[in-house]
Length: 180
Image: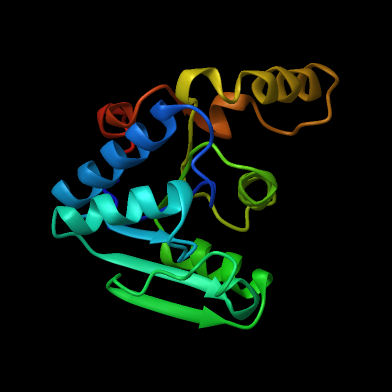
């Protein structure tokens, strides 16, 4: 499977580790170089801005989808290829999923986790079967991965973890998998 578009879910803040922004930038450059459209939340702050600006630096295509309520808070990105302003967060997430061939989750906060778990749930329910990559920059998701394994061992999950998502430690790993 080759990707035409990838949804990237990440923080509207940059976090306190310089590696977060560095890997977001590397990912953006790789997407542009491979002619893969970035689909993301439309913000111009934090890791969202880092990945979008990196794609644009290399001449790539960026589609942002942002709900009206966040246009001032996340400072929508006016320089991207296409900015879609929608009514609600639910519409935003649905459009992000519909427009992508795969999802990549970078470090982030509650919203990033919400998007990750909704994608995992939709995959489990066979609503879609898009590959999900978790970019575990500097061990950011180690604690979460331990908890997900606990859910699996307690028999609350329906699929083996390797069928649910792929954990990677750097952006280059995405493009060396069997998915692309």
